[in-house]
Each structure stands twice: as C-alpha cells, then as structure tokens.
Picture 1 (spheres, rainbow, N blue to C red):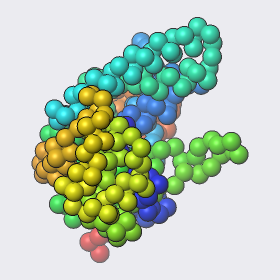
Picture 2 (picture 1 turned 135 degrees about the vertical axis):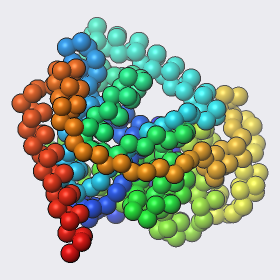
Picture 3 (picture 1 turned 60 degrees about the vertical axis):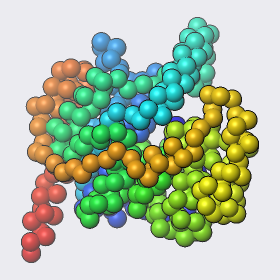
Length: 346
C-alpha cells in the first residue's frame, strides 16, 4: 500500500551505470510483493512449480538481481520483523480485501474473463513464512547480503543509509523511507527494464529521490513532511483524511507549520471519520521518529551454486538450462566485483 506523494516529489532519472560500486538497501517485502504482482501469466496467476507452489518471487530474485549485480550494484535485502501494534488493524483490513477479491476472481474465472482475472489476482497476493525463508536462502546463495529488521524493513533500510557511509540509498517503490529520514530513495530499480504501454514498449529507468532536495523544493522540514504523509495516508492510517490530497496537504502543512497546529486544523475531520479509520496522529508521528532499528553488518558471501540449483531446479522445477546460463552471468558479476575491489588498491 504505502504512502503516495508522487505528484509533489522532485526526482531525476539515473542510469544503472551511476550505481556501479554502490551499496543499496532494498526493502525486501516491497520488492518481493512487486515480483509477485508483476511476474505473472496472462490470466494474472503467478508462476508456479509442478506442486502448485508460487515461484514468481524466486524468479524475480534470481533473474532481476543478476542483471543488477552485472551493473556492479551491491545489494542488501532488508526483511521486515515484527510489525508495530498499530499495523494489526491494517493487516486485518488487507485480509478482508483479499477475501473479497478471491470471490470476484473465482467469478471471473468461471466466466473466462481474462482481464478481470488479471485485475483481481493481484489483490490475492500474500507472502508466507516459507516464501520469506526460501527468499533469504536464495539471496544468500547468490552472494547478496540479507539483514533482518527488528520491525519495519523500510525504517531499518532508512536507518542503515543514515548511519553507514557506504550505504548509498534505499530501494523501494513506496515513499515511507523518506519519512524515516532516508537521505536517498531509488525507485524502479528492480522492475523489468521495459514495460508495455498503449503506444508500444517503453524503457523503465531508475529514479533517484533525494530527501534534502525534496524538503528544499517543498519548503518544509522533515517533521512537516511526516505530517504531510499522515494527512495523505500512511501504512498506519491508509485512508488518511478524505478530501485532502497531496497538494492540499502541502498547503495545510505550510500554513500551520507546527505539528500540533497542523492537526488541530483538521481535528474535526479526523473525529468525523468512521471509527475504524480514525487515528492518533501523535502515535504515528512517534513511529516515524523513533522506529525500532538496529545496526547491522553487510555480509556479501560467496556464490553457492549447489544451493541455488537445489532451490530452483530440484525444489521448484526451474529449467536447468536457463539456471545454468544465468549462473554463468552471476559468476561474471562476482568476478567483476573482485576486479574492482583489487583495483581500489592501485
């Protein structure tokens, strides 16, 4: 779900080459859900093995990440831990959405309506413990670093980019990491490099968003950006305040400046919301300011080809020929990283 402030946020397209040698902290859950929702069959169903186990996430991890490793990008996948209590009701609501979508998908299937099947199938996505654990195993076997967050992966990724000089940016399609103070956010990095539009195929380039430039352009500080996000709607209050979009929220924030005054101005609107949509802005504000985070080491291990083959070929029926071909590219990527590392000494 995530915060949507796309219309008012300055960004710039960057080339993959500009990220050569840089460490980026990937919001793992956001990216795995992205793989599950985009790597699908024409009717919208995810890729599956012969046992009907979903494999879209593994396909994304293996094929997309090898492309990034060949660009010299060092990947750190940051996984969610225990969700804050405030998110419990959000998870309950998402479950209800999935149940409703499941009924609609089944109806569309009976009617053989491919378009509607594709539409509702994306709402059925969920990551279970088995998928999460095998994702971690595959990433480690590829030599990609894995970090386990105590709570939100996005807040942990933001924290690591703030405290570590060699951590360049957070990678996520959501904007929440900016509210957690991430100095840089990269979007579109793990998407397919081309997407189909009405006018044909178009190239998808990574986009860089810099927190300092965001605050300068909008004329606000980080506290005010957090308030803006809460007005629009975050993962902790998904519906925000109806009638207040991105531009209106910016006007309110710039007019009242102080968090207490900002939310005093919309107090009646919050109180008039249905009970399940009401929120305590101070509680949410505090979560963005003091998230549960820890320092972590980045362990870029060696490639374990046997482990990769076991997960993909033996357990999930991936094509042996395709996996072998990609392993050649993975070896090449690792060799390039070694050569660059040696070059740093001369």
